Structure formats: C-alpha cells, structure tokens
Length: 174
Ligand SMILES: Nc1nc2c(c(=O)[nH]1)N=C([C@H](O)[C@H](O)COP(=O)(O)OP(=O)(O)OP(=O)(O)O)CN2
Image (spheres, rainbow, N blue to C red):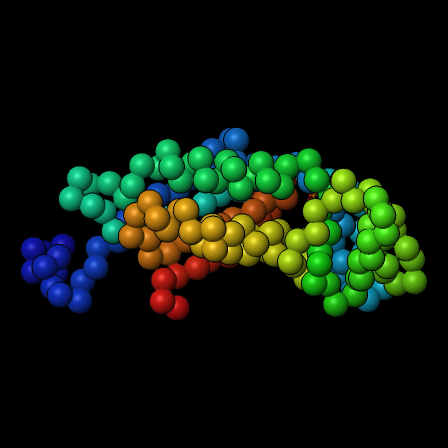
C-alpha cells in the first residue's frame, strides 16, 4: 500500500478485533419450529458466541480496550444463560401467561412452562441465525459497545455445536 492510498481523502482504514473467548457461551433450552405443524422437542445447547468488531484505530493504535468489549460480550451471554428461550414473534406459536405459568400454543397442543424458567425473545424462532440477530441488535441498541470506539461494523456468530453457526451483522449508516 503506497503512502498516497493511505492519505487519499476517501480512504478510511479499518481494522477488526475478533473475540471468541471460551467464556462467550450460554446454555439454553429451546425448540426449533420448522412449519405450522412441525417442531423439535424441547432440548438444549451450549451456544458459543463470536463477536467481530471493525472500526478505526485511535492515535494510540487501539480501537478501544478490548477488555471493555469482552465484558460487554460476557454480560450478553450471561443474560441468556440457563433459560428456556421462547420466540415472541413466531408466525406459528402463540404464548399466553397465566399466573406463574406461560403456555405455548402450537399446532393444537398446549406446552406449559414456569414463567420463572423462560425468557421470551422478540424473535420469530429460536435458531442460531435469529439468536445472532438478537445479540447483534442488543450490542447496538444497548449502545455500550459503540461508545468504546468509532465502530463501523459488527458481526455476531452463534453456534449450536461444532461446525454449525448463524451470523448477523450491523454496519454504520447502512
Ligand atoms: N436454519 C437452522 N436450522 C436448524 C437450527 C437452527 O438454529 N437454524 N437448529 C436446529 C436444532 O436446534 C437442532 O438441535 C440442531 O440440529 P443438529 O444439527 O442435530 O445439532 P447437533 O448439535 O446435534 O449436531 P449433529 O450434527 O447432530 O452432531 C435444527 N435446524
């Protein structure tokens, strides 16, 4: 790369920090809904999370202290750890609260849960791709990560097991 390209006014040099610490994980129960009348049984995964942060370096050659990014990512994972996750925006499943219970109505069946065991997420399904979207939205909406540095892009990956993951991204001004 010549000096001229670096100095070109339209040139914004971006660098990326990748975080995939072993502690960036959460254990959760869920079931994937495949259609109006087909779903999996309730089961669980140890979901693993990866976060990719792309932005501009400061004069000190840093894009913020990635310790800050890690703390934010760990808090995000902890918020979903050891819950049964239900989709609040499924086209096929409806949820009804009754006292200490949440009833999920699906394909003519009623599935009972204790309210204290479940988190209802604003998602259409509890899939790796929807979970990646959810975590990416929370990183942006909760704003803390954007306060650390001039970030241009975020990508969150959620894996339900080795060799399979879903990813979602955010880009400034898109
Ligand atoms: N597009 C998606 N399809 C499926 C998802 C998903 O999140 N997005 N999730 C599932 C189920 O959660 C299922 O439990 C995962 O299926 P499976 O591949 O069996 O998971 P394993 O960890 O058991 O992997 P193995 O290949 O069986 O070892 C299904 N579809």
